[in-house]
Image (cartoon, helix red, strand yellow):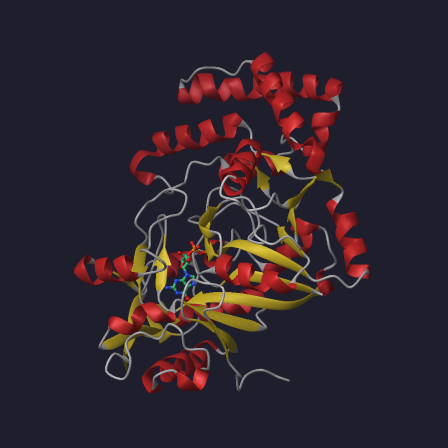
Length: 434
Ligand code: GDP
């Protein structure tokens, strides 16, 4: 059985918490796309952790954590991260790295920085982790696969060839120091020594696991709206954030993905540039940012304050549809307890017409939110943490969840009311076909 845990929106929906929670009953957790450019925050018995590359299952001793072929693998970051958790008494996780994963090279990170510098005010708000240059190279067929580290002759020849090519751009476009092939080769030798014990034919491993009836979780990074095809292009990431890509980025048959758990946050946040229709500003945004998530809505990788907004039914309905959602996990509901009234975006007004279908980027730029005010639950009970049964939630809180489910049209079967593993309410949804 394969379950995918993915995001409906711009990322930071709380996928890490949901994956960590579901990993209790899983055998294998696979990262299938993205790189160290975004992060998950996880709170569990060992403490609070920020993960960028490791799958969120690394805190259990019964799970295997897999870096799939679709990931942008930054080897030093991976090993720093392993060290950062084992230093805090987490047992050394069982890790496998796909021999077909490609590596983020030191120059990818430089190119990312140089390009942002060159674009100046027109930049994409990149996290400068080398992700866009990495995926550009992968699809231009000039990337480096982990497997290539083990063929010395090929590697030597390729490093010289790639440096020649990169140096043209460095010299003439960016006016920056050139790459030295010998240095690069030495770095790759270090990468080889680090990664060698973990390298594996991942798709074969997963095929065997499926035949043995194991439970596999595919852990997505970011969300639908950052997908290069279906998101807010060009303000997107460079690898597909959709559950469907999980099949490719892990190397499993698409029909094995039996459950798609799409994570939606009870309000919106986004990082980077791009249209964000339900965005709020000023004191209203500051307060939600301060109270949001677990200790405020600030980027896990960059520390940047996240942009804040009200729940967007249009974007979330679309986000769930493109993921192929079977279940919605609705997170961070506890944070909204302080509000008397909660605005929800139920439509977009574009050129005088209201729509509930998410448009292409050029139209999205013109969209204005149509807001509906829902009553808060402050008077009945502000703090909903600790509640374990949906029926025990305050009336207006239940109404908020029910209203959003109706608007997005996908079953909310989990409601998260706190950052911890146990802060979860399972809900029977009228939309769930039994
Ligand atoms: P991800 O990238 O989708 O995993 O999301 P992040 O980890 O960046 O952001 C989610 C933040 O919300 C983290 O700080 C989590 O600890 C926190 N979080 C997750 N679920 C809940 C919840 O139900 N309530 C609260 N208060 N915080 C939550």
